Length: 162
Image (cartoon, rainbow, N blue to C red; front, side, top):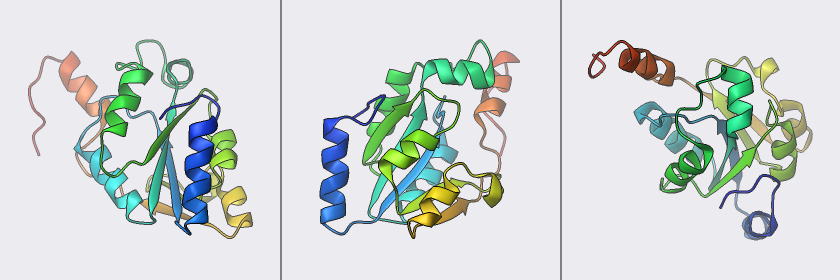
């Protein structure tokens, strides 16, 4: 399920999970050209709780952050692919440059970002911690990068060497 503002289905799902005492984990990103590093990251994030909510930047947001020519995959397709992953329970989109609003709406128990983010730079950290939640980082997978994949494609190169 994907919504620009958390809609009825998302709100009901979150309420049901909370009522069942389930721990809700949130992470976010562009997830353009989904690759193995993304899948492993999402599996590890899901392992930190009972339910995983993924916030995905809208196409307009991606263009503002990464420039024209991105995303390569439209948001509805990025959302559909993420929803197909076993580790992902709910996908929500956000059009702002940061996920602050959607983090406040989801109110996760655990906020997760990649290990390349310093804790003091993680958007939503103070809100989550003020509610008794925690913030976790997950180390990036060496050799996996959408930027690197795009560069190899543009250069006419084949599969990434590991």
